[in-house]
Length: 409
Image (cartoon, rainbow, N blue to C red):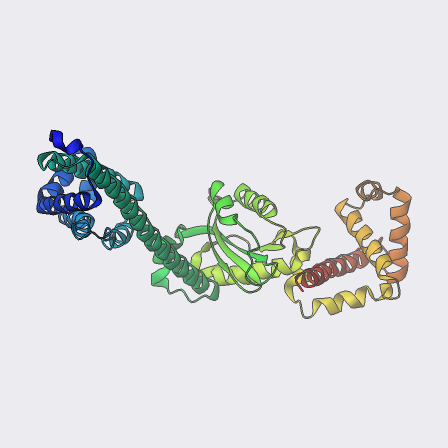
């Protein structure tokens, strides 16, 4: 800069210098754009494979003009070029970091051009500081606006994909997926085209709330891909098991850890088009799930499946078998049934059941004798035991459902 440029400049003089600087920068807009293009492709070769030169050149030129044309007219920077740039980039799958790198390169080029132009015109130090302040503020505004546009488009894409995924899951669950769409559906859901698959049905705590928050990510850590749909009463998932056997056990363990909801799981199947049948079996398993056994796999626990197979009929069956308990106080009735359940879980050992319930073994035996007396069914009779077990499973499911309904009321 010239020696006289160090003298303090009044506001009008500084404004005139900024206007002159902006006009000179606009005159150099094409040269500045070419320099930015060269630097960007030299420093970040990734641009070559992601952005067309023509599109990038137009964007850089628009940004230069948007920065300096308002300055030439003593106005704020025009940010209209930044938002569309971010949205287009997100739509094309360009990482946000790539854009930020480009902005940093452009800033250095523009600042070098400002310094050179200011020196040639003998610009005052105060006006130079004003120019720097305006440029930095413009860069911040441009990057903020571009990032907002980028995030808006990315959010729109995510919502659109989630809506498509949800619709495809619904089609699978309803058995409406055409044979020709199986591969396309699998790709959209990020599932393999062939199984084994399972359907998961988890009872939601209330309408609109997830039964198993973060379960998709949790299963993903185990290498189990899944797709989900939230419905008014249940959250439904279709999961692809990497292999048979142990993978199903790992999935059940993850479902136990994923929340406190009751969960039913279908048996494994190989064809995605069988998902609607898997849903029916998962719902039956869900009806058989109770507090003591929250996750039930259809087929692994036949009694639970039978107990939940006809929810409109089975409670009547249970009431008939357990009718002798109706005259007892509710607390006594629950105590006898819970003791029976503990005895079953202990493989018929009164001593082990007592240990789990923190009571004396004779207490367990006395309660079981009371159950026999009240129901008229002997625990030494195989048929009577089978009937009591079925009634107990039905009763557990009914009590759990009533408790859930009371909790969500």
